[in-house]
Image (cartoon, rainbow, N blue to C red; front, side, top):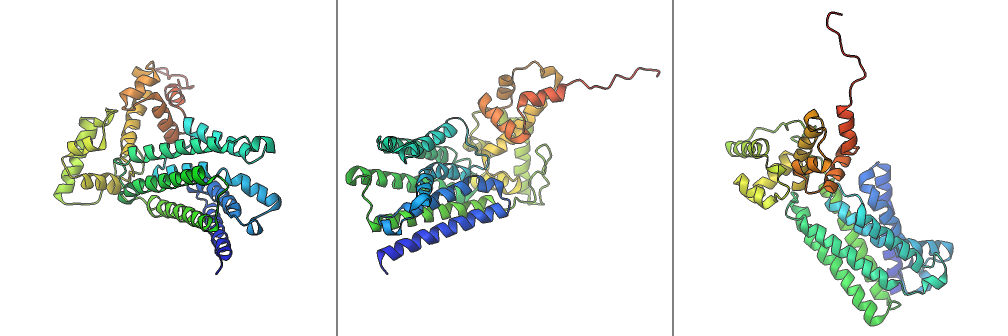
Length: 360
């Protein structure tokens, strides 16, 4: 089999698998999982269509130009998809959204969307700098949140993702510097396509295998309701009682600096046991979401209490255990679908019904 035939097989098979997976998500109505994977799959198909040194087997014409443009956006959606795999609550906001938008704008210019004169302005180096920033941010997020990840396989995969993406970016940079941007032998492009497909497929498998699994029966049906836990030996009962005391009596969740390691120490149990308790019996996939669920209970209580009607939102946030007003607003919006200010206004709004008059 010739290198050209291998090249075509890898690219066609890869595009077929990507589009099939994306279509499956759309048909199944998997909106959350498809939010980042579907555009990533489309952009990767554009990348595969043109990532070959042989012009004879490269997609041409208008379709080729569109594919070339889409391929320039793949890095952003790969970055966001990686973050979404390891954080169910991830949404592009603030600097993450701004950086992604900047990459898309620069890539569009670099690929000639606004004229060939701008396309030759050397913007590829700016894309490399942005790429390093995105990989650095991803590495920081995955490592920072690793200790609180309550799913063993996903926690272990965090370091591997950092090493693989960091290694790929470093290798591409060295090749671009030493060999030039136009250097692309057949063996290298085939290996690059295969490695990218394997990495994306592994992430998709990780997302479906771990994050899509049904939550245990003990998961709270409502954030304010106590979980119904299965019968267990005395040691498990002791741990749950210790957990209840830490939350309801000591209110450790109101400490914005509380770490998982510190919590394990307070529980007086092995790390693995505490992870299993919070994940498998209480249904939380990360220690942060466990804490935020209890912090939200306190925040709701304060927002609906007339005695706290004049408290500033930053005061409510800090007294509820959140580290900043921004994180408080973000979590509140995600869980209540409205800002905390609107929630309080609705909760404390006077009723329209006239007060009952005694004797009538």
